[in-house]
Image (cartoon, rainbow, N blue to C red; front, side, top):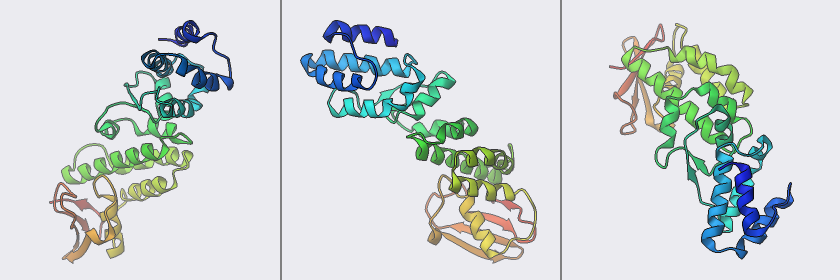
Length: 249
């Protein structure tokens, strides 16, 4: 349903909808005049029209508050499940915390999605922290998989390619992580502190707790062991002391 058809539905039910900032106040005051089912149906139609791109672009930045208000009044759904089909839809998704792609494990899709696109959405949007966590999670998992299997594109080169995007999004913590990861493409000696840092940076999903990383030197190899159950696909990470080359047994 596009924006025009939604407005027609409201006009038929309650009269002409005002423009601008007065619209939400009018809607909230008018909905109790309808039956609950009719009111809920109109609100859902409005929200679906927004998701489908039936509103002006400026509404993207306002819909978060509108949806919250209508939900608090008992007329708007807690969330709507809908996949993004266009690039413009991704922006609306980023600005609408009640729009989700999947009811369960939504973040899994972002392990394989283009992180540059996600970072381009992140600056200032309500889903910023969630997006940055998903980007970091995906990079971490790809880095670990690369070290474990020794195949696939280099995650260290990927990290370098994402640095500009992360900095543009003012994602300082993520930028620092990507910069460290990019540095692992260079060979050189690694001390104990460096081995501990690699143990944190190559940990799957999220950084481990400090107490869950144990480092010991065995010959020319730093052995980084994770004490958290299920933390790694393999029980430890090996870092060559002289070259910094990493592998998992």
